Image 1: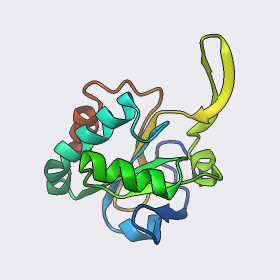
Image 2: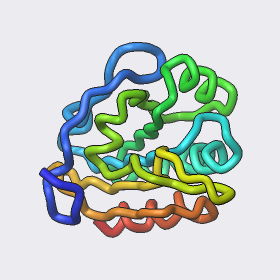
Image 3: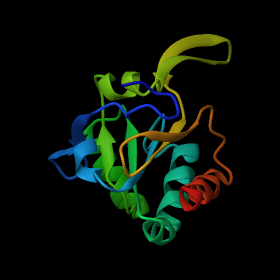
Length: 154
C-alpha cells in the first residue's frame, strides 16, 4: 500500500457524520473520490464541498462515489453537512491516521508561521481499489470539474 498512482489505496475506517463509520470497503467495486479539506465550514472548504455536491449526479453516472475527510470532530461535520446541504459522507479523522496514510497531513505555513494541518489533497481511486490520480495543493476553483473529467476518463 502506498499513495502513488497505481498503488493499492490505504485502507481506512473512521467516524463519519451522522454516527457510525466509513471505510474503504464501503466503496468496493466503485470509483471513489476522496477530498481532504482543512476545516469544516471555512470559505474554501465550503466552496469545494458545495461544488462536489453540485456535481454529485454526474459523478454517480461515472460509477464514482465521493467522500470528504478532515480532522474535524463528527459534531462539526454534522453541522457543516446540514448547513450547506452536502450530499456526501464526511469522515472525521482527529487522530490524523487516515490523513497521514494519504499524505494529507503535514506542515503548512500562514503569515510566516509554520504548523501542522490538513493539506488540501484529492484522490481518485479506481473500482479495483488502486490510486488512479492524485491532486496535491488543490486550488478550489474548477477542481471538482477537473476531478469529474478524470473520473469520466477512468
